[in-house]
Image (cartoon, rainbow, N blue to C red; front, side, top):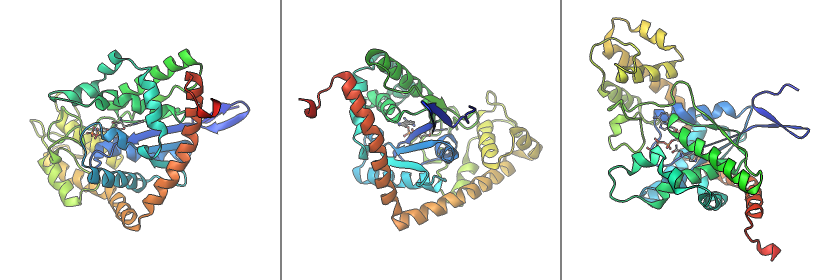
Length: 345
Ligand code: ATP
Ligand code: LTN
């Protein structure tokens, strides 16, 4: 039988492949999150069985204001829907609403080694220069592995920065399977060929990030058009005035061209040709218009969702469905590891 890539065979049944991804409610989502993750989430919902989570337990690995955190968690879920996810097709839930995640994370912490976690570049970046970091920041990738493995995930759509964490997830799944018998599916990361690493507008050697202390370094998905125009106008550029793609010699303009290309659907060559001899100013103002226009329906849908309150219901149903699947996997894990169940005493 010929199977579409969104399907897999289980015995005599053909089932849809699973997709899992998560986004931290650690700040307002920016166009890097949009191009690398949430803007792509909806692409999978037709053919795949999708699970998308707002990973608030990951967010508390660094200090968070409790009131703000709860608000941002709901806002992040609303943005998933505003960016095109249909709750009737994809399961959308908050990580801390499902206790299986912390439960499996603990078991996997007893499989992961101190050495391999110490090699995680995100940990090294986030810990650099800090006087003290939490143990949670160190074991963060194990919680991410738990998120993915609980759902027998086949595919994990993420930005480039998460590749190493998905590789660790694969290693942990294989190690666990070898030690305790086949329990987990070994997932594959899915990183976009273009847009997997959008860079900061103020420092093109750093990735655009929610937690960068300079808000002008990122375009937020909910920024109004004037703000988008102001930030692009202020964005650093390289020497010269030609709009050409050369990430080595012209990292700033190449980053802006990538954003232009992804939001407009034009190739990098088409963008270069359209701005030949026109200079950076015209290019930046057109770029701002294209991005603002593309994000307009997302902003509108977001406001409607936040005022209707329907997101609460979406998250409740999502958590129930997620728990139904993950709790069965947790039972299997406990059985294999030899963790006692009161029912069997
Ligand atoms: P923080 O700064 O708090 O670490 P973040 O902006 O890096 O946050 P995450 O919540 O960690 O965002 O990431 C959500 C998703 O967006 C992940 O799939 C991640 O790979 C992707 N992503 C994050 N930053 C970028 C970026 N600059 N370019 C492309 N994808 C990105
Ligand atoms: N670590 C990711 C967020 C995340 C995630 C996941 C992504 C947590 N759990 C599971 C994919 C699958 C990040 O920082 N972007």
